[in-house]
Each structure stands twice: as structure tokens, then as C-alpha cells.
Amino acid sequence: MSVVLGAGSRRIETPNGVMTTLASPTQGSAGQAVWRVDANPGMVGPVHAFDAELVWTWLDGSAVVELGGERYEVGAGDTMVFPADVSRQMVADAERGFVSIVVAPAGAQVYNPGGMSEPDACDLAPKDAERLVPPWVA
Image (tube, rainbow, N blue to C red; front, top):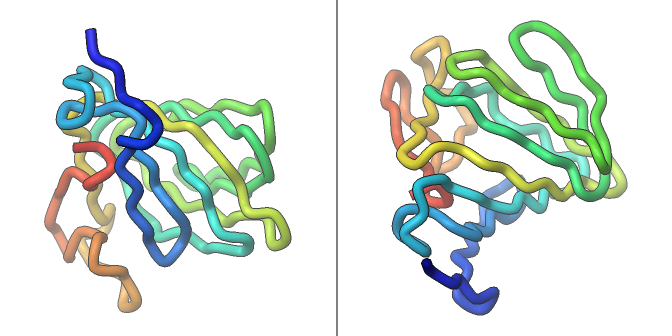
């Protein structure tokens, strides 16, 4: 059993918000990665996919999620199961952003579904056909 104290949580700032790792293989020796997303108001996330199923639960705020060509409006209390290898993109509420908790299997990799980086991709994003484990999942 491991205890990860709040003061020991790993916080990673991205252009779209803050990812806080609550548990992961390198933080608490967990077999699952659990992280909190504090999305900036109005953020438009990158189009991307994961090679594993992810479960997202919204705690506050709201978002529009494009998942596999379908559009969903979600907010506090809603949960979505994102299947593996399905393209997704999120747009946060313009005034409040959103707060979510996400769970993924250890080692889940993110990638660009079309194999091409977005021109304005941040340094943490996969490049072209690269697949990587995001630092908040590691």
C-alpha cells in the first residue's frame, strides 16, 4: 500500500491547463494512472488518441467533447469512457473551464491519429507518428 500526500502530487503545466498526477506507476507504485485536469477557460485541446481506454469524470465546469466524429456536451457529474484508438478533442467552457479526474492503465500512450503534429503543438505533445506516455501518466 502507498500513500501519495497532496503535497507530493506531481503538477505539470501545459498551455491548456494543469495536470496533477494523483497516482501512477512512478507516484505511489499504482497499476493505474489517476490525474486531475484543471482546464483553462476557453481552451481548445489538441486532436489526439490514446492506445488504451480512459475514464473521465467532470467535477466542475463543462466542455464539448468530439469523440470519434460525435459531439458531446458534458459537465459536473458526467462521466465518459473514451475507447482506445478513437480520435478526441475537447473545448472547455469559455468562462469556467473545467475540472476532471481521469483514470488510465499504466503506460497508456498518446499519439496523433493522422500521424501529423498540429503546427502549434506544445513541447509535451507527440511529434508526428511518435507515441509517448504523457508525464502525468508515467
